[in-house]
Amino acid sequence: MPTSFTRVKSISAPLAINNVNTEVISPKDLMRAVTRKGLSWGLFRPYRFNEDGTEKADFVLNREPWRNAEIIVTLENFGCGSSREHAVWALSDFGIRCIIAISFADIFLNSCLKNRLLAITLERSEVEAILIEAEAGAEVEVDLMLNAVILADGTTFSFKLNELHRHRLLEGVDDISETLQFEQEINVFERAYHDKHPWLGKKLELDLK
Image 1 (cartoon, rainbow, N blue to C red):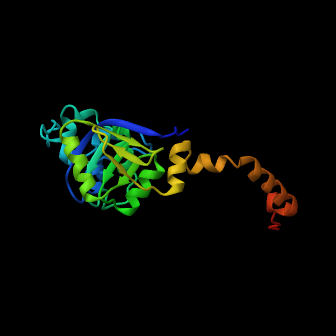
Image 2: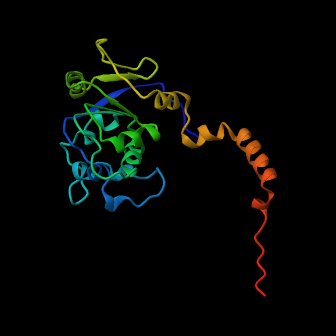
Image 3: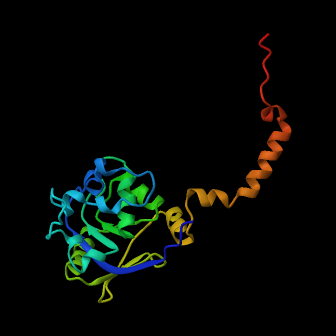
């Protein structure tokens, strides 16, 4: 059952790169799971690891304090390329709860919001200001109740989010759990429909002789 999302306050990992594609976020040869768990080890593999499996010391998520970041700050068109949902699962499995960018690829953006990973778009000047804070190792607060990103000195940037997605994040519901809220009404409708069309519930019996 999903949990509600109201705010996150965390070290933010600066990833000042345009066009980070899903093949980098979650390479296809590592997509060996059909669940949302166990994919974090392949996250950003071309950026995080050498061919022998050792960490690349200069990649931000391999360094302190950003190794435990729950927020990523990046530039334009994040999540472009393949529509693979595994990219979002890998980010969440690593512990990332929010991505702040100038823009996202459309499919990736929708996958984030359906999987409870908050994706926020801001103006370039605002993202650049947050990147400075992130590179300094300062915490950034994202408050979904206020629709605001708040820096350590109190500077606040407002963001917009589709109201349906905001509601689902705040209430902790997804497509399935939201449908199940109407389970009683669905059952009443199904019983009435089958009473009206009783032949739908009977096995088709064919006389093959």
